[in-house]
Amino acid sequence: MFEMGGVVGGGSGVLAPLTAAVDGLVAANHRDVPLADLVADIAVLHTQEQRLAAAKMAMIRA
Image (cartoon, rainbow, N blue to C red; front, side, top):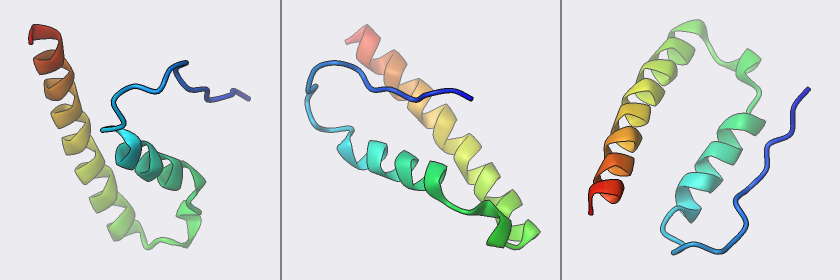
């Protein structure tokens, strides 16, 4: 078992929608989703992870 925590501090607020989306993904019941849809969702999530990594690098370089 693990606990997911947040970063102390408010930040800019730009990531609030992303945080809400991830919270929804964590809370979702993935057993009710057809396998083909689950595979597609995982592929999209992988793409979004790559985009997020690129955004983090851009923030670091700024």
